[in-house]
Image 1 (cartoon, rainbow, N blue to C red):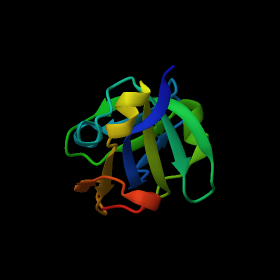
Image 2: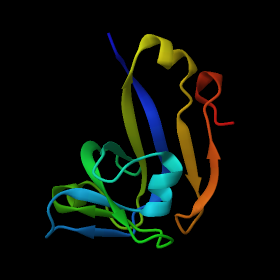
Image 3: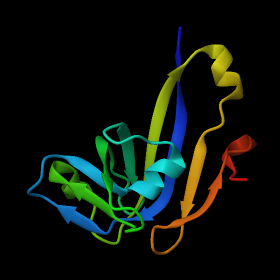
Image 4: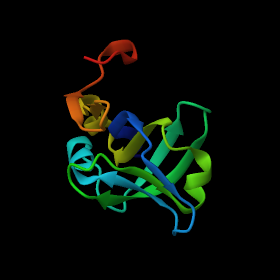
Length: 127
């Protein structure tokens, strides 16, 4: 039996664009994807902090260093430019792997650049 565990998270990034006329996805600065261990075309859950919307989509790598967080297609209806979002990816692991798994948590600055790569301690606090 495998367990679904948090693998990587980009925390409180600012939406820079929303493009309705596009096949659904979220375009993310490739530096952020790398820092969080999220692959291009990987499924991610997105949470909009402003309105509480949660939805699933997949990632497209954006230009490195651009700070882009662009919701595309139907996902563009879930957030507005300027909203803060959290992106989370998950992995299926064995119970033994789950015991030592350390999800990567990427904290960003006001330009969506990597400010810190952290991990969770007990009770959900960031280290």
